[in-house]
Structure formats: structure tokens, C-alpha cells
Image (tube, rainbow, N blue to C red):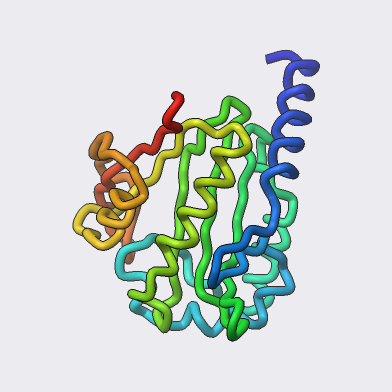
Length: 197
């Protein structure tokens, strides 16, 4: 790819990212684009070991390191500029509590190469993941995304069932696709397609 095409791709991806990086709402949730300043009120929620049972999430070492990571995501582009990297924090409208996160990586071709989410342990089994992911999917589809991929660690039936409720369909097994506690694990990949795709 020549420099002109690279610049055009970067410009298009940045424009896509800025269109998609919007605050969203559901009945119970504010789904807010991630900001570094959110770190102080979120850090303690990462201390619960149960959060890491099924996701290969890196535990933040300090409020400062979490703030730095999230400040980088305020510019919602992958390092090579090929994808929009979007990340939202879920906040309870009624209490202001931090509930969890949803993220998505989007190409300019309208493909979400990964949709991910996690809910902090105090808020498990309250329907927040379904509510938030459904709203994010609607948002992406309304802005030209036609295909969304999501992966679940093999054995995580709760997340598998959630994706099925959202309309995802099993696609394939990905061997050694992630790691948990330093050990490789397989993932199930699910795909959601726009009804007109």
C-alpha cells in the first residue's frame, strides 16, 4: 500500500472511530466512551479474582497505569490505524456505580473483528451485559457495521448463551486463541450479521 492509500485509510478509519465513539443510553445504563479520568473510580473493581475466571484480562497494577491505558483509548485507533478501537464504560444511571465495559474493534469495511465485554463481579446476573451489548450492536449496525465477531473461552457457557440470545451464531473453534493464568485456552467464535447482509 502506497503512502497516499495509507493516509486515506487512516483518515477513513479515524472518521469512522469518531462517528462511533458516542455516549449511548439504555433504560438503566449510561454507556460512556472511556476516559482516563474514569480510572480512579474503577480500579478497586479489578481487585476481585473472580473477574478473571474466564477472560484473559491483564490486571491493572495501579490507578496510574489504568489511567494511562484508558487515556490511550481516548484516541480510538489501533496503533497501525487500520481499525477503530472503541471502548465504553457502563455506568448505572440510578446510582452512578461502574458496572463493566464493552469494547469493539472495527474495520473501515464494516466488520467488527472483535466485540468484548465484562461485568464487574458485584453486578453479575442482573442482565447488564445483555442490555449493554444489545445497545452497542444496534449502534454499530446503525453506522454501517454489517458483521460482528465475538469469542468466548471454551466452557464459558454463560457468555456463550448470552451471545446466542443476542443473535450470534457459532462459527468455529479457535485453538489456543487466548490464555488464562498463563495457560493457552481455546475459544469459540460466534458471528452476528446484519439482517440485510
